[in-house]
Length: 394
Ligand code: FAD
Image 1 (cartoon, protein in one colour):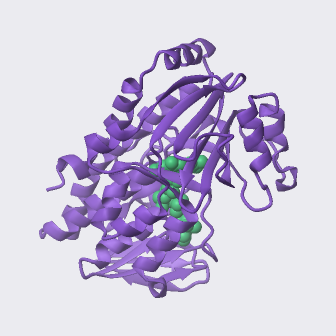
Image 2 (cartoon, protein in one colour):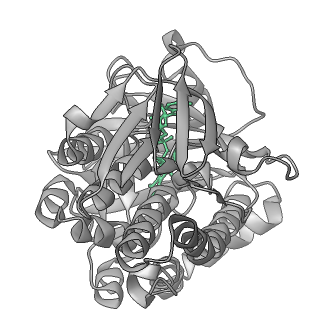
């Protein structure tokens, strides 16, 4: 079968690997001209790592992953430790250690594993059509390609989603109320221990560091603010100094460790209400195109990987028809992914001070937390994954 994938991100590249390993002819098109992932790093929770293991990349991903043994919350202003505990229960409950990884490293691994010669960059899809048993994409340069199946892994502003959801109520993005700044620094123990995910919180704002491979740490800052504020890259960390300049010494140390010229990204955070139409004819959406979520529980890319897992298993096991396989994929994935979007949104609302009393109650709870409540939440996000339960895939 010839399969066209739009988008070479984590979703498209992982789906591509799963499908090519089943013996299909797969080609990926992406409008980007070079591999430039948005964002510096991400946490791959055990469900996401398990999919990468299933794709045959266990050793490679372990080599890219930071060693994250403990987790701590600190008061942003005083630096006082509110709670600190081991992350070992995540590994023992799920059977897989989670890894923070640099995005560029993961992206490069996925693209080279899929085969760079099968990825065509600088190809923007502008139209999709179906006729008989073929689906055709038209590119901005006027060229076309046709296949038996099309996977739209074209991200949060997906064109494929528009095609699939034609005739339904418009699917709109919702602003999550904050802007995220992120990047990589050389690991600095004055910010947090090298093997710890350390988060500073106060006034609805937060910043954190997590280890990735190579003596580096992923950092991020969340700043609640309206959407659409102007920002010029030349401003560098000025907005962070304004928002966090009077925070604890560990945060000041983090600010002074950032090199804005080499590693600083700024992204407004939006999500999309869950929706359950992911398939039309021989076309399906996958990843952020199907379930754009805020990063508050670090499950967006993990969900995209779950999609690739489910699609791969279903393509390997169903023989009735392409459409039947895609509809089963939609059925097993849309509810689970949508539920994670809502879970993430709830967590973002709780932590960003939109209702100061709710966020204060969360801070108060952190002071008495022994880790068990937070572990329950993280493990709960993972264990309902189809990679652990079967989830109706078979
Ligand atoms: P994308 O990465 O957006 O890829 C889509 C690709 O499609 C792009 O390369 C684009 O160029 C291409 N494309 C789009 N339109 C077209 C077109 N018309 N023609 C051709 N190509 C097209 N997730 C986690 O699991 N853990 C985390 O810790 C985490 N942290 C995050 C932190 C932040 C700040 C953000 C914003 C997100 C985070 N996420 C995290 C979510 C994660 O980044 C996304 O869920 C994931 O990258 C989505 O991958 P994707 O392949 O679906 O989409």
